[in-house]
Length: 171
Image (cartoon, rainbow, N blue to C red):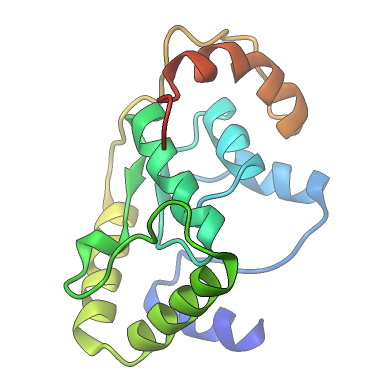
């Protein structure tokens, strides 16, 4: 983790990487101007409920690849970096065997690590996002304004009906 923290600081002084207890994390999140994250479940709902502008960065594993596709259809105001944004890369396809998905994700990560052009583009996109003075208001169908940042479970309960209406039948 220390190596990643050092590399992130070199990328942009506003980036913080670390581990924290959930309560501490929610406090940090509420003070954020914006958030960069890989696709996940809790963080999406917490950022959405806290109206924290969010940019999804490249998915690392198979479930994150699939989540990114779904989130693009649901959360129009979030920003996304997907593998399709980089020449020679692709989002992992639906319904591939787990072992193949793991190997492909690992190989993409290794290729990206050695791909100077892709890493430069990644840095430029992250810098562009972090440099914004204004972000889009985050909305999906009249979200109940009383939602508070108090964990994914409560937030998900407030969003589940609206999200289910927007999820396509097939991802």
